[in-house]
Amino acid sequence: MFALYQHDVTGRPLDELTSDARPFTRELIGGVTEHRDEIDAEIATRAHGWDLDRLPRLDRNLLRVALYEIHYREDVPSEVAIDEAVTLAKEFSGADAPGFVNGVLGASAKETIASD
Image 1 (cartoon, rainbow, N blue to C red):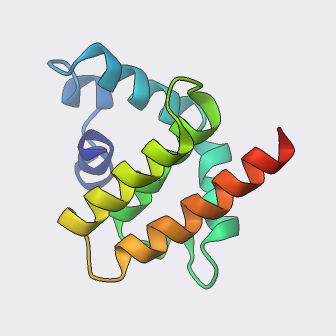
Image 2: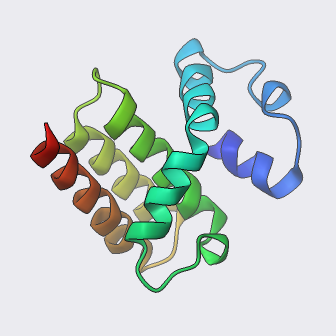
């Protein structure tokens, strides 16, 4: 999440930002990058009243990583992805971010479970 945030803020290449990262981190970033258009479209759909570009960059990248895990990582339970994202939002984002992140991800997880 932090490498994606740094990339958004500085424009530095992700390869440079993750050169020392663990393989799992690089895999997450690669997956988010590969599926970014679909993930961003889902965020835009679920973030009622928010334009994707107006979301705080950190929150946007929290959502990207968690949605990637929910939709594309069978080894990460949706509840775990949501809990981790909400915990990070509580620690690093504004007061309203945890509820917002939980709402977007919870709606996505419910729809994913319903369609399975």
